[in-house]
Length: 429
Image 1 (cartoon, rainbow, N blue to C red):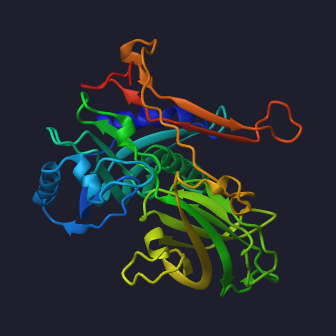
Image 2: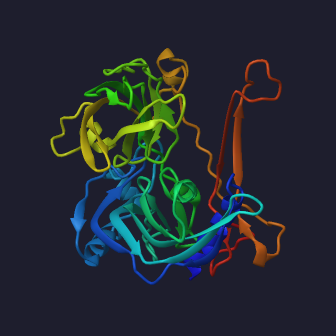
Image 3: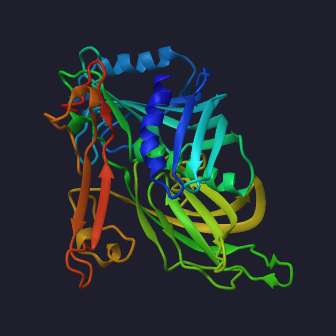
């Protein structure tokens, strides 16, 4: 009940602000528990981003044994033995990767306002959510409770499937698609890398600057070429597709290539985009479309690959950043392929040549990483019972052309929302 109320409160303002406003009428998530499997536990150090070794664990004593070993040594000893290191010296930690699946028989009712007089009421009778969750226990200490803080989130955007009831037709399809997009976006903005939720375990020793873990590095992705595409059959004539790709890394922003008009063997080898990678198990997603000037673009297929497989940390260890992926449509192979080239650049503070090198300049390219850590806020002037505190940060740089006051670059992000809870102060988050 508490989780349902929290979801309702967080999503309601966004749903009411859509072009087709919606609001919850009823929220009951049922009593089906979440299932877990395929647990992998490994140690992590500064900047490792989950790159340490690991093994599947089938019982809780395995985690206890690891914590016991780490507790027997000081954090400095662990760093000297190679668990720490990276961009800045970090205390040792433990990361747990685990598959989670919630297959719930819920009872949710929503109402969409189509016009002032027309309203559509529909329900969600079944939700299935599954993905790979990581739990980061860091930094570890030599005194109880052993763990200074717990961070958790999804390595990649979880898959969400919903079954609707109460209405039918194209109107419901549009509304349902909008709702699912809002839910996916809301989860990604809080619980998908690079976003994590943090729960301090030792408020007396907790230091967010020690909890923060820098990313693995920067990844430059290029859709080199495509093959296997065929004529699209129409009612009157066959159509040669106008192909473009949408490329994403994990839950970050997406990059769209140019459209190759009337081309069955497209190439985009001179187009690339840089992404920040936080974990080797983050996935590169490639969605391929046929551009339609008169309507909605047609999906030609989708593909994905983990950074670990792309850069050669898989079973064979022979990958070189070049990978040909077969596109999948509705669970079936299409016979169409996209070749992806990935280049991995590790972050360092010892050599800053990238700030001046032409290799790192240009559209969609990064020359460095600035990290902004919002560690706390104090004395929020609100009644405690009404406080649900978050911080908005906006970064601006330069001026755009000859437009006064318009920044050349603008990026805004939000911290998670802190509400009053035993041991948590929403007025001093």
